[in-house]
Every structure is written in structure tokens, then in C-alpha cells.
Length: 211
Image 1 (cartoon, rainbow, N blue to C red):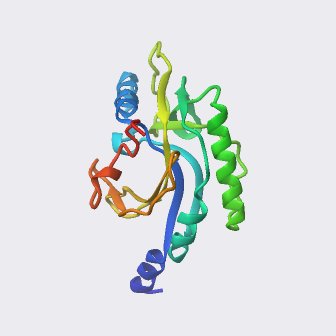
Image 2: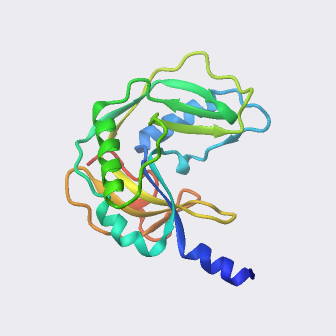
């Protein structure tokens, strides 16, 4: 297969996930917690603009389904407070800040989105939902801080996001869903180095907590 068909095939598909982004204050606090760790030499810390909590990973899907997905993944939910209180090292050197007792509203949102995915012919992942924010990768051998208070932020929206390939990586936000009003399609925004390419309102953090 030549390079051109490979590129065309890649452009026809997109890797999608549903996520919650931290508020400004929560993002700053996540970065502060990140700095409190004693990292091993090979650690790859997650940049501030990439910190998020994944609700569902959709995988690689045909790009022509984006309009259908953007509409079909809108579900009703109530705003809630997210509490992250467990700093852990998971297998393969993944360092996370996890919700020890996830809010009922968060689990309800996750469940409703799972139902929406099934209605679109997309079975959700079978693994148990463990809500967390990844702070670093390849961090085996790192030393966590001795103490750390729980981190809280108010969740008022979730997003449908594309994970971009290539050297710059980054995220492309296709839809933001607000808890208080019907989501309206807006300009896409590329999240790379903390800046949006099109719409500043969608640059990270995606939710400022003001509703």
C-alpha cells in the first residue's frame, strides 16, 4: 500500500473519546499535585492542557459518523462535584489521581452515555469504570507525596473529543454538552499547546465552572 492511500485511510477515521475537563482552578491544582511527586528519570508528565477525566473511549470510527455521534451522545445530567482523593501508581507506570468514592451523578452520567453508545451501535468498553485523571506515564519507581488533600471541582459539561495523530498530538473538540441547556454545535477547537486554533471559548480548560 502506498503512502497516499494510507494517509487517506487515516483521514477517513478518527479516534474519539468522551471526557470531562477540569476547571481553571482544578487544572492548576492538578499541576501542583503533579509537581509534588518525585519522578523517576523516564517519567512523561502530562501537560496541563491535556489533563482530563475520560468517561468513555469510543475508538477509531469513520469520520462521516461525526454528525450522528455529536447528536446522539447528548444526554441529560445534573451538575456535580468531582472529588479525587487517591494518588496511585497503576500497572505500566501510569500515575493517576482517582475518585475513591465516585459521585452518584458521575456514575449516572457514565451509565447514560453508555446507553447512548449502545443505541448508536457502539458497545461500551467492558472494563470497570474507575474515574481518574492521569498525571504521568512511564513513571514506575516514582515516589508519591507524603500527604495530599482531596481535590474537588464542579462539573457542568462534558465533551466529545478527537485524539489527533502526528508529532504535535493534541485534541480536537467536536462537541461540548452543557448540563443546563441543549448543546449547540460550535466551531471545532484544536487543543495542542494550551491554545485553541479556532474558538477560544473551547480552549482548555473546557469548563470554567461558571455554568
